[in-house]
Length: 425
Ligand SMILES: *Cc1c(COP(=O)(O)O)cnc(C)c1O
Image (tube, rainbow, N blue to C red; front, top):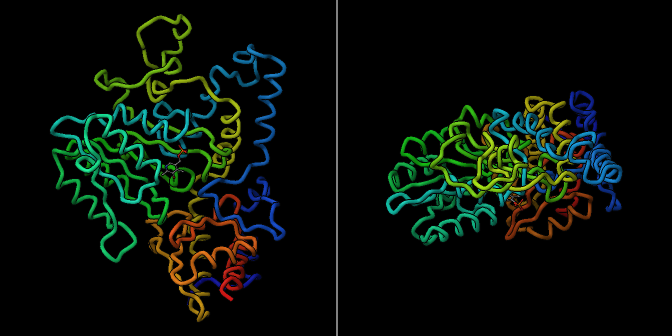
C-alpha cells in the first residue's frame, strides 16, 4: 500500500498541510489556455514571481529619474548591482560569497571558465562528459577542444548508459576517470541531466577527478534551485548555471558562476578579461594591464545587465525566504506523489504504454520526471496539452515534467493524473 492516494480530496488535504503553500500566490500562472494550466515546465522556464515586475520597474524608474547618475545614485546603485545577488546565489549552490558571481549567460560563462580550467597539453588533453549532454554544452566542449588543436574524436570521452539502459551508471564515470588517468584534463558534466533528470554524485566525481589530476566542473542549469549543493565543501573547481529554469529569473536571464577559492589567485590560470573583472578600487583609473578582482568576480567581463538582474534578485529573495531545505523536502514528496499517480494510471489502464526513466531513488533525482512514451509518444503529449498541461516534449519520445516545489501543488499533480488518464483515451 502506498502512502499516497489518487483523489482530489487527498491532494487538497496535502496542500492544506504544505508549509510552502503560500508561495504559489507569489507567482503569475499563464492564462493562454482555456483550461487552468498545470505548469510543469519550471525546469525550462520558471514562472514569473509577481514581485519581479516591481523590481524591474524600480530600475526603469531610476533610469528615468537619474540617467547615467543611476550608476551611483539609484536606490540600488547599478555600479555594484551584481553584489546584491551574490550572497543569496552563493547560498543556493553552497558556496562562499567570494566564489560566486552573477553575470553574463550560461554558455558564455562555461566558455569563460573553460578558458581557465581546460588547459590541455600534448599528454593531458581529454575531457570526460556525459553522453547526450545538453546541445549547447556539446558544442561548447567540441569548440573548446578544436580551439586547442585537438579533434573531438580524440579528446572527448562521452559516458552513456549501458546497452538497453536509460541512465548512466556512475561506476562507469569513475572507471573512465581512472582509465584515462594521466591523459584527462577536465571533467565537465551536468549536475542533473536535462533529459533523464538523473542527478550525479558531484562530490565523488570531483574527488575521483582530482585524484588523477584533472579539473572538475559542472553545468548546474538543472540543479540550481532544484538540488541542495555544497560546491565549496565538495571542492568543485568551477560551475555555471542559468537563472531562468528553477530559479524563475526571466527568459534568457543572467547566469551564475562559481570558481573555488583554491583558484582565486593562481597567476598561471589564463582568463579572458574585461573591465568588470578588474579590481574595482582602481577600475576607473583605466590603466593598461589587467588586475583581476579577487574571487569569482574576476571572471566578469561586462557591467551588469540590471533589468535581468532585478528579476533575479526578486526570485532569489523568495528562495531565501523559502529555504533550500524546505524546498528539497517538498520536492521529494511532490515528485514521489507524481510518480505514484503516473504508476497508478499506468497499472489501471490497458492503454498505457510508458515508463518513467528518471531514477526511482530520490537521492538520485530532483523535481523532474522523464516519461518515455513508447507507443503513444507525441499523440499523448498533444492530448495532455489540450487538458492544460504545460510540459516539455523531447524527440523522439520523452515527455519531461517537473513539479516545482515553490509554486506547484499536490492538486496540480492530481489534475495531471486526470489529464493523463483522459489523454490515453
Ligand atoms: C538550459 C541549458 C543551457 C542553456 O544555455 P544558455 O546559454 O542559457 O542558452 C545550457 N546547458 C544546459 C545543461 C541547460 O540545461
